[in-house]
Length: 174
Image (tube, rainbow, N blue to C red; front, side):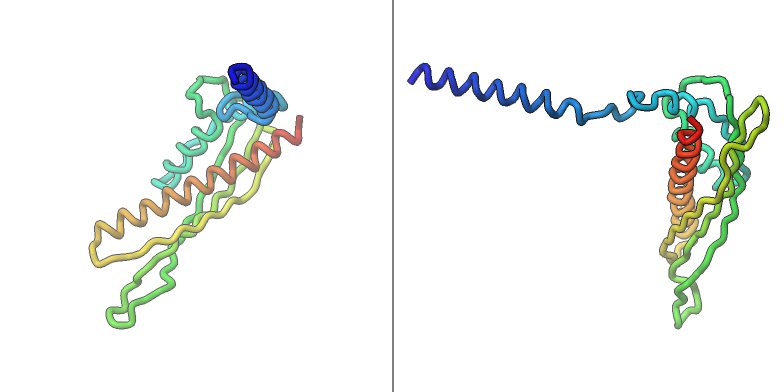
């Protein structure tokens, strides 16, 4: 009996070790550089995001800076990203009794262009679109906050879309 338990423990330990070794090849670091294209992460950190006007521009610029260089590391700029935002609000649903909007939709479009700094060569450009809806209430400040939250959601979607497109363009150049 004693030898059977000892053998079972050894077998369980060997199985655990084998499965850990097999799975170790599948795991990649979440925030660290990837072994396949570590230079791309350095290029993304070197993107300078130009100021974008208005509140929505502030939200979008902060999200882009974090998306390109979430480390806070100060890297000399080799690229410049300029973004222009257009924003409009639609009120698709009206209350038939009061005639007031019960919901609203913020549609945001961002035109972006990435250029290399020494030669001002355009590397990527395009348009990203985001749509966020919110409910409107009789309380004025609740509406203001709901609209601001929708703008923040739009900024996050736009920043992720722009970051992915810029990363794909830069990876294709490598």
